Amino acid sequence: MRSDVPHTRATVLIVDDQPTNIHALASLLKEDYRILTATRGEKALELAQAEQGPDLILMDIVMPDMDGYEICRRLKDNEATRAIPVIFVTALDHEKDEEEGLNLGAADYISKPFSPAVVRARVRNQVNLKLKTDLLEKISLQDGLTEIHNRRYFDQKLAEEWSRLSRNDQCLSLLMIDIDQFKPYNDHYGHGAGDDCLRRVAQALERVPVRAMDLVARYGGEEFVVLLPETDAQGARHVAKGMIEAINSLGIAHEYSDVAPHITISAGGATHSTQHPKASAEDLKEAADTALYQAKKNGRNQYRA
Ligand code: GH3
Ligand code: MG
Ligand code: MG
Ligand code: MG
Picture: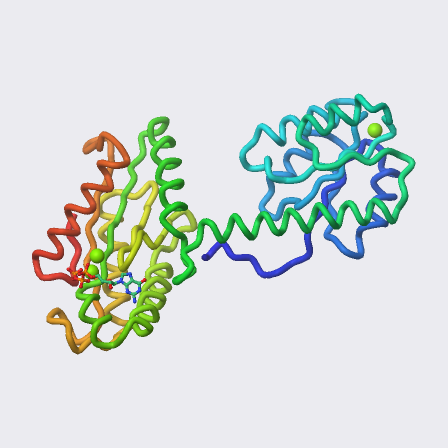
């Protein structure tokens, strides 16, 4: 997936209104983690949502403008930050404070004065758990064979884009793509070669769209789907033609195709716009599928919309 980031150190965000407290925790952890700091709630919330955001937050409770409980509540209310584990580190040591923190969804609670070794161990455990959860989430949204996004991820994104549309007057395009005469390819070259072909086609398709918000996913079998937010029919045609051209250029030999001596794809597209609205995301998909059928019927290796 294009969203892959190279392996980097995990990031810990330390939130405390007292710079000396931040310093004490940072000096414990800075050898093993990338450290971000915030002395105010607004800043903490902003850093938590940033591109290279934290894998863990160490949070003070008593702070002047927004207390740690409130920051935690807001983090847990926001889809983008919900999964970041929070450990409260605080001088409040009543059982009910600890209970309140944990009930807000905090992963752990450390009372001051703390043991440096225990802080390090608790941080390590929570960071490891977070990295494992991230990996599982990534795998659940990825296609195992081609390593591009899977249908589950696509369906999520389509639903998100569709609900965004009802608020804005924007268009949304969708492409359905199917490898031509892939059954004879499998039958003659074998299933292993078929799998290799699927991987190469998927990777080539994923390289075509230029914008980060465009999404290419394996829909199932030898079918792919492309989601093009804020793209009109002309833009969709441009991407589809680019994909057809990219697969022709791969030149994967296919002696048993009557379309070309190499692997080709057919593509069908549909666009939702204010001038030509679709009733639902399902309708948009069906229209693209109907167009794909036309592309197949009309000789394959082409685009229809
Ligand atoms: P058309 O041009 O009309 O699309 O014909 P086609 O032969 O591509 O279509 P058909 O639906 O008859 O065949 C699809 C083939 O895709 C059959 C199936 O064996 C193969 N296939 C589906 N998923 C996989 C996979 O994961 N690996 C391999 N190797 N083959 C797959
Ligand atoms: Mg404080
Ligand atoms: Mg098919
Ligand atoms: Mg096919």
